[in-house]
Length: 332
Image 1 (cartoon, one colour):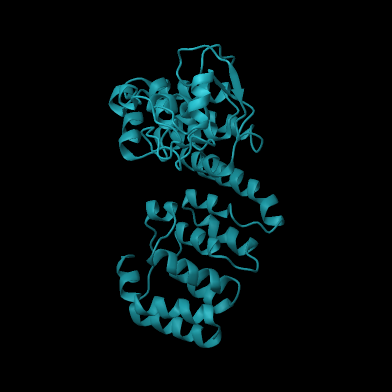
Image 2 (cartoon, one colour):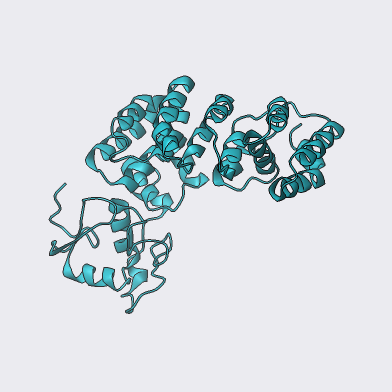
C-alpha cells in the first residue's frame, strides 16, 4: 500500500521513509513526526497510528518507550501537548471491526474486554476484516496478531482463513499463533498433524523452544509425540507440554519406571501442574488425570528418587512430596 500522508500524524505529506525492523514496509513520515519518533516523543495518537500499522514491538515504538496508551516513557524532548492528541479508547472502536482491529494490534496482549468486543461482532464481518488485513500486509507482527484474534474470536468459521495462513508459513507467519489458531479453528486431527509436521525440522536440529505449540491442542496425542521425540538434554519444555496435554497418572507411572529421559519429563510435568509458570499453562490450569491416592503417589516418587539419586531428581521429588496433597487435590 502506498502512503502519501504521514502514517503518524495522518495530516502532513510523507517526506521521509524509516526502515522497519520486522518487515519490508517502511515507516512513512513527515519530518516533524520523524523527529518526534527519533526523540521517543510521539504524542499518543501518533504512536497509535504507527503501532496499528507496524505493531507495537517495532523499534522506537515498543514498551520501553511507550505504554499501551501511547504515553512517552523516555522522551529526549518535551512531548508537545499530549493531552490534545489522545489515542482511541476501546469504547470508541468496539462497534467497528476495522477500528477494533487497529486497536487490538496496538495491545501488548488481548485481554478479556477486547476479546469480548470481538465476540460481540458478526463472525462474517470479523472474518472479512481479518482476511483483508492479512492479505494487505506481510508484517510478521501484524499477521501473528490476526491469527491470535482468529483463535479467540472466530474458531470454526476461521478454518479456511487458517488454512490460507498455512500457505504463508514460514515466510511471513510464525508457528505459535498459527498453532493457536489451528487448535481453535481446524478439526483436531488436521490441526495437530499440521503443527507436528511443522515441528519436525526443529526437532531434527535439536531445537526445543517451539514444542509448546502442541500444547494448544490439550491433546493426549502430544504425550505419544513426546515419547517418540524426546531426547537429551531434557529441558522443562517437555514437561510443560506434557502438563498441557491431559497427562494421566498411568502414563506418569510408566515414564517414571522406564527411567530417563521420560522420567525427567514426568517430574517436570507434575511440577508444572502444581505450579504453572507459562502463560499457556496458566490459561489451561492443567491437572493430573486419573490421580492416585496420596499414599500411592508418595510411594512411587520415593521409589523413583532412590532409583535415580541425582540432584535434579531429588529436588523435584522433594517439592512434589511436600505439596502432594495440593497437587492431587487440584486434580479431583
